[in-house]
Length: 73
Image (cartoon, rainbow, N blue to C red; front, side, top):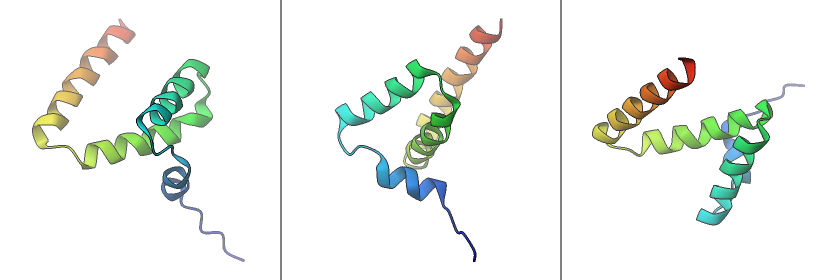
């Protein structure tokens, strides 16, 4: 028997469909600090990334680079 489990699809089926629900999901995942929630946040980032212009992607990369540098200093 073959198991074909698609994490992206599973996350997208369970993700809240309202802005309040999405905010709660993101804030809950961050505040608990549990690594089990990271794949879900990664899927949300992927959806956001794919729908952004190159300019928006570059702005996100710049912000991420700055924040990562601040955390690692």
